Amino acid sequence: EAGVAQSPRYKIIEKRQSVAFWCNPISGHATLYWYQQILGQGPKLLIQFQNNGVVDDSQLPKDRFSAERLKGVDSTLKIQPAKLEDSAVYLCASRDWAGPLRNTEAFFGQGTRLTVV
Amino acid sequence: AQSVTQLGSHVSVSEGALVLLRCNYSSSVPPYLFWYVQYPNQGLQLLLKYTTGATLVKGINGFEAEFKKSETSFHLTKPSAHMSDAAEYFCAVTLFPSGGYQKVTFGTGTKLQVIP
Image (tube, rainbow over all chains, first blue to last red; front, side):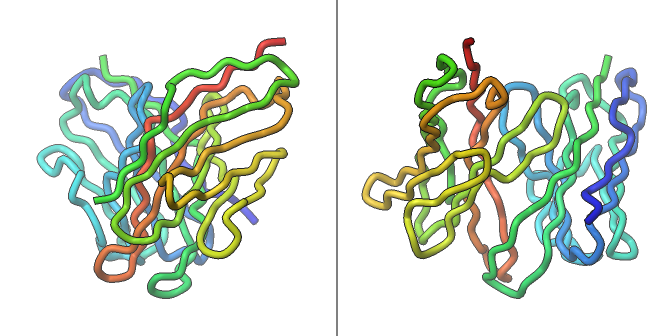
């Protein structure tokens, strides 16, 4: 099966500019995650969708970050305006929904490496 | 709150030597535990997972991990390191907060270097 697709792979922008990332999850996966991975750290969850609804966005800096998954399939993550500390790899992951309390594997995309200069 | 601690941000082993990457977790309820591997400029790939049942879990590429509840540990091992094992490894714990949706927390990662 096709994996999680992300684009672009790399992006360099100046601070205060805007940027958007796109994610296409595995077909049929209801759960979608965006993670931020700063160099030398583990991935940090930014936002979690279940279909087109937000389940958890407690660690999303909402003053500058936004995300949507309008049709419950593709998702975009936007940063506006970007700061130097936003330089990181942004990972998208998706997971099949097997019901409450059922554990399934999350599949990750290759990520988008953002450099803010 | 759940958390994961990986001891050692960098581990070096000789090719053919035992690989041991340490992970300790903190969880108020029985956890589900994972190990992921990340190769340079790649996403995360699942190595193995523990949910319930047998505490010794075997994964891909010859890796295995043992869930030890008394020690709150889930260390990753491989009997004989191969050059292709050089990568960064992440331990992760998942819980089910209210609503039943899985939430995954990652450790800070351990970078494995294999010396020829």
